[in-house]
Length: 86
Image 1 (cartoon, rainbow, N blue to C red):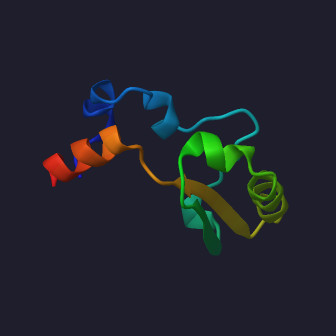
Image 2: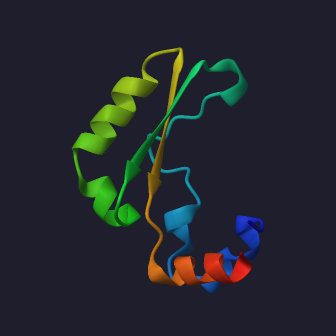
């Protein structure tokens, strides 16, 4: 997969893929024993409006030994760019 910074200009809403949202948690992956991906099978905007996801994210990340990240399905423009890039 190419560097995301090289493909973000090819999609309509690149902010969906950059991270760093308000209240996001940054932890050291090398110092965290338990790592969890909270995946939502739809777009970022829809997943973030589901109240369960932010609640789980905060509860998990409030534990010092747990790192939780959120992942969402890409929109069709990003999917096409990713498929083209291989």
